[in-house]
Image (cartoon, rainbow, N blue to C red; front, side, top):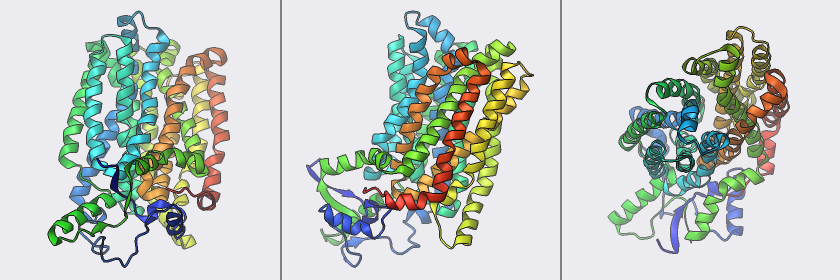
Amino acid sequence: MSEKSSQLETPAQLDLESGPESASRAAEDGKPVQQENDPNIIDWDGPDDPEKPMNWPKYRKAGIIATVCMLRFVTPLASSMMAAGLVQIEEDFKNAGVMFITFSVSIYIIGFGLGPLALAPLSEVYGRNIIYHIGNIMFTGFTVGCGASPNAGSLFTFRLLSGIVGGVPLTNAGGTISDIVPVNRRGSIMTLFTLCMLVGPVIGPTVGGFLSEAAGWRWIFWLLTIMSGLATLFGLAFLRETYGPVLLERKAARLRKETGNPLLRGKGKIDLPYRQLLFRNLSRPTRMLIYSPVILGVSLYMALVYGVIYLLFTTFSVVFQKTYGFSEGIAGLSYLGTGVGMVIALFSMGWYSDAIHIRLTKKYGTELPEYRLAPLLPGTIALPIGLFIYGWTAQYKVHWIVPIIGTAFVGIATTGSFNTIQIYLVDAYTVHAASALAANSLVRSLAGGLVPLGGPSLYSNLGLGWGNSLLAFLAIFFAIFPLLFYKFGERWRKRYSVSF
């Protein structure tokens, strides 16, 4: 590729928050600003152009959405499924320490945060589709590597690599939704996406527990390989490029060939040195995280939720085996309480998210992304309630159904948090939704990977009651972030806008 190449960004993408200020900022940066009346700029043929992804037939959109849902189920499933086979893995790799084996579960989650930092902004340069396909193929290959690992070091390495590429559907899906789903319907679709993402870690230990008992821990990865391979094939069959700037440039290339006019270019096409443009795009998630207090604040709250849920996921089986005498396979069923809570949240969020957004828009006469945060407020209450119930009832060995009911409240809060925050970021950052979600993913994934390592020490020093109470108090404190952003988010987004 040449040192100077043509890449795609619309003027609005330069600063999504400042609107009219984007042109002046582009001029200050020395970037060419396109004029709307330039006859050589290729745009959509009106708002009803059938080539525009938002106007595609429902069957094509359904195929894309179903495939992305499958991808968002498989990669998170792999995050916790391995946990059920840790005892067998420790026996096979006797020279590896227990902490190292345990960290091979968490390192996958950390990979979720690292990979999208590069892959998400690249999807905003080269398009969503190619990133999906590369990520799917590499994820399948690295999963094979996990199953065939001859030692703990190999397993650790392949887990990290599979986590890095496995994060593609978790962040790029938001961009795909912003491309093909109108704003007043994104709530229900993002709720479905969130459920697919969160159900995987819930049922993973259950399936992994019975599978490792019956066929050994390596079959956990062989099953994941089969599922990932099928998802890859579905992706090749049904996924289509949805990113508008890339599609417009393809349209311009076709017209240049047909008309012989070399000046035709897709709307937003800007000539910059390749290295400069690549650096700007790759650094976008980090800049968004550093310079936007809105993204940082909601990411910190998601980090708390993610850290708590993965701490519980990595300790449920031990707690229920030691406290209630569950077998290894039956202990996996203890995760279903969280799953039930997630399903409850799915239906309630899917039903009310879009309705609340529409009602608030009509009430105040303007459409704001902050309206998406309204359904999050009950979740900020459900999380500490669930932690208090789970911790103290398990501490005093109350009937096992009671702590599982407590975990259902945690499931409600988890799905509610993920769903509302992801929709909020998609609505607030539209064409750069993938980068915004990547910034969010980095913070929450680091928490999800590192916080569970302290779970055993937390419970051994404080017990289940006070240990989970500490988490509940932290949840109450961090609840201030979504409350503040619901009230002041619009003002802060405009005041601390990020130049993209």
